Length: 312
Ligand SMILES: NC(=O)c1ccc[n+]([C@@H]2O[C@H](COP(=O)([O-])OP(=O)(O)OC[C@H]3O[C@@H](n4cnc5c(N)ncnc54)[C@H](OP(=O)(O)O)[C@@H]3O)[C@@H](O)[C@H]2O)c1
Image: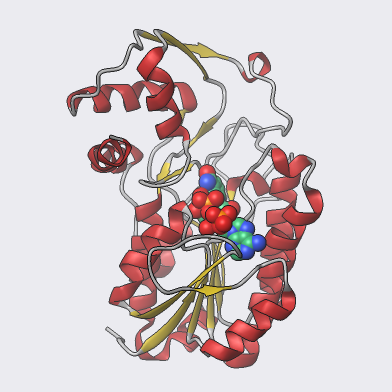
């Protein structure tokens, strides 16, 4: 395994960034960056992804071999009105990072979303499927993917879905918090996808970087492109919620929640439209890297005690 690589990591305070910060230490020297005003328990450089000059300055200062970019504007509903900021972070910044990575011969790892697809039917989208985002967040992420592919040379994009981590706000924690006091919860049952543990994303990223070894830049050129990366299987938000409470109770969770009722998307209107079908086919990841993420239920079972500990 290569050990002298320098890795510039964005979004280190986020769900995926936190996990990446831990596992990428096995690959090289990680230089974390944070948004202005953000706090991080350790040394980190400030790099505002809305500021192209700041991005350029930090990349030239650090001279990384690898740039890993999990940072994003992820507030899907707020993005509908906060369009300028969303576009700067999700569309423009990835393109700038790709351009700088290309100029400095660094490999870029970027993350994207199932929200780039139109979400109709019941097929599993492949990386070749037609895109067609339903909301501004999805459109901004798609523009980011396109900017990476237009400017990058050694670059991999991982499209994922329904992410939850130990830290940060996510569906698992929201359910556990609401279930503490409320005997009945209503959860959407007509959106299907794969919940994905942030650590799965970090582990697979680290394995792929390790596979690239000494000539990672060439490896990234050879495998350049978009890959789906989600935990295995599929479920609805309602089934996911039921499994969350089942597993939490095994670990001593004592919530007031007695029943979780399935509802339709129409019964829970949100500012941003969501896709009904978020199924992503991960065969390409297996074919290129020989890796297959664990089933979502196994990942959740592994994550649950850690999430409960963090929330206590
Ligand atoms: N969460 C999901 O369900 C989901 C689903 C599909 C795909 N994804 C994708 O997966 C990736 C990781 O998502 P996540 O869940 O880890 O997101 P997250 O927890 O919201 O973390 C996002 C990170 O980006 C940072 N950031 C935001 N604006 C910034 C700026 N102007 N300059 C520098 N940093 C900034 C945030 O810093 P602050 O804490 O200071 O804001 C935070 O550290 C993203 O590309 C996302 O689009 C996520």
